[in-house]
Length: 347
Ligand SMILES: NC(=O)c1ccc[n+]([C@@H]2O[C@H](COP(=O)([O-])OP(=O)(O)OC[C@H]3O[C@@H](n4cnc5c(N)ncnc54)[C@H](OP(=O)(O)O)[C@@H]3O)[C@@H](O)[C@H]2O)c1
Image (tube, rainbow, N blue to C red; front, side, top):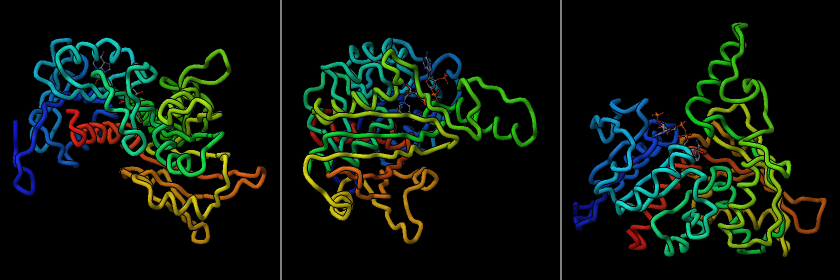
């Protein structure tokens, strides 16, 4: 279908399915499609039988959530998936068979060789080789590569040491509820129930995100390693990660240390990042100004600050990177992929 855009030209519109529409990422997806005025013809909201029949609002219209089935993708052009990896594994192939292009937020297909893993500011050209599925990287990977790409292009990053401070919304809506309830129960001296995390998250830090692997790292930590190498198309970068869940509702923070092939000063990094798409530099320690999760929440940019020389090696830089994990870390990046595909005439 064609509709008129702001300058009066005909514009293609698309049937979009949001799979996992009632979740933390799905909700943000709906809001971002609205906010960015995505050229939507029809939006189909899909979830499990727990939510089928509920109504959600899109552009002022009440839409009923429908049950996710293999037949639910009839006439859908774009499938924005965030229902968890096992559900994506089951239903993404059906969506592709129906003719939809799928942008999947889960880890199900990210490391498949024939599936592009894309951050539009970093490797949009990888979209050209898609075969129906495009994977959205993990939230902690996206914000890191957006900030590091201009530096990698300029002076070649040899090694990355990253420690994350990840918000509970990264685990989903039940984890947000768990932090809220536990916090209240600590103050009112009630029992603390741990249902989502193995330990109390309120007033605590858990050095454990996703499952432990044989090498002693967690799966989340290895996502940072493997996904960054795939997005940069550079297996030679040394990367070591420690992923920590902290009692923050929205916004992931990361302490990132890089070692580069050639020297770069903190001033040059600031200059590069000030010009970089999707990045905002907040780095005025003299005024106590640096990126904060509570300020990044609800924003589209990836914020970088505390940029300083690593004085322990010849060519090292430290920095602090913060972004809204539900927006740039998930839903916004997915919608930006769709927008980029339209721009590149791949949709
Ligand atoms: N949160 C983040 O920051 C983030 C970032 C990047 C990627 N992701 C990934 O995105 C996915 C979802 O995350 P989330 O945080 O949005 O989780 P969530 O808040 O728990 O939401 C899960 C959504 O999936 C739906 N769902 C679950 N099982 C289903 C099934 N069998 N059939 C149909 N729908 C089903 C749920 O529907 P019901 O209401 O019916 O249960 C809900 O809409 C995960 O794979 C996660 O790793 C999350």
